[in-house]
Amino acid sequence: MLPVLQNVSFTLEEGEILALVGESGSGKSLTALSITKLLPVKQFEYTTGKIIFSGTNILEVSDEKLRAIRGKEIAYIFQDPFTSLNPLKKIKDQIIESYKIHISENEKEAVDKAKYLLNKVGLTELDDRLNSYPGQMSGGMLQRICIASALMCDPKLLIADEPTSALDVTIQSQLVDLLLKIKEEISMSILFISHDISLVASLANRIAVMYAGQIVEIGETDLLIEKPNHPYTQALLRSIPSGIKSHQRLAVIDGIVPSPVNYPVGCHFSTRCPQVMERCKLEKPLLYELTQNRRSACFLQEKKK
Ligand SMILES: Nc1ncnc2c1ncn2[C@@H]1O[C@H](COP(=O)(O)OP(=O)(O)OP(=O)(O)O)[C@@H](O)[C@H]1O
Ligand SMILES: [Mg+2]
Image 1: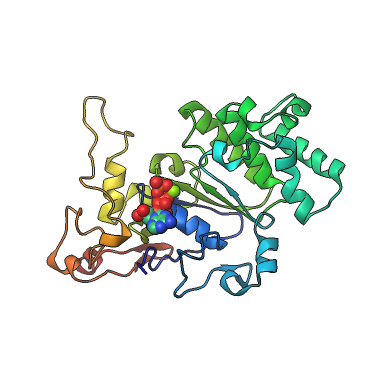
Image 2 (image 1 turned 90 degrees about the vertical axis):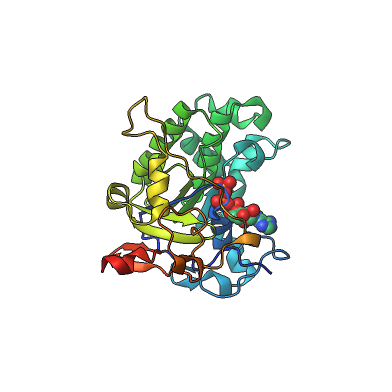
């Protein structure tokens, strides 16, 4: 067995939006799926740790209780609306499914709730939409349907795993605005996953930065963006266009995220870090507490003390 995620630890408060960012392959989706044990049991094992949701350790609950939590209390929106919906089933049957399982079998009630939410996410001609199949709709419409579908049981926690990255930039920002608006009405927490730190900067209360299966930095959005502490967060921020003059080239982070088979012995970022020291290649830094709510996993902290 290879360790894929290590020392991934964070909290999410009621009503809070926490963003999980990092390059492709950093472990964001595995983290999202592991929260409700959605990873295939034959391939993945939890070796240690706890996942506490509303006081209950998800790793210890019965399968029945877990099914009651999934879809009802913790709902997901995934990256690609085309693969998250069944092409052979009408939208109506897919959107009301979780409501009928968890809340009430009354079909009219379920359809009314679906229409209410579809209207909220900006869709019109709802009877036609409900009677359509996924193949008859655009990606933007389908993603709106996935958002509505995730909200059918008023979840306490919404896990949105790159919910807009398969869409055009204009539709992306519309959907982000929409999620924020809905969140004001329904008091839920959101774990918003994205590789795009500039996208989450406008919506998250806090940001957790992931690299090669670990959280390397976590803190309040404004402070983290203004004064990134970890060399990886600094590199991520240098690679986005904001504030850079048009003739300047964006910085690239050389190399790629190592896969679990070749995670470095010491700090996972040591092979690409511009400030690497000998020690970083041998030892793993733990998350140092910089200030309240702010942690960073880098030995440079010790020098600053
Ligand atoms: N089923 C699997 N078996 C083995 N390794 C896997 C499996 N799924 C993912 N991995 C590996 O785990 C690491 C993290 O993958 P994950 O999909 O969580 O990344 P991610 O941050 O969500 O990336 P992306 O931005 O591309 O969605 C990657 O190195 C990936 O190759
Ligand atoms: Mg992913």
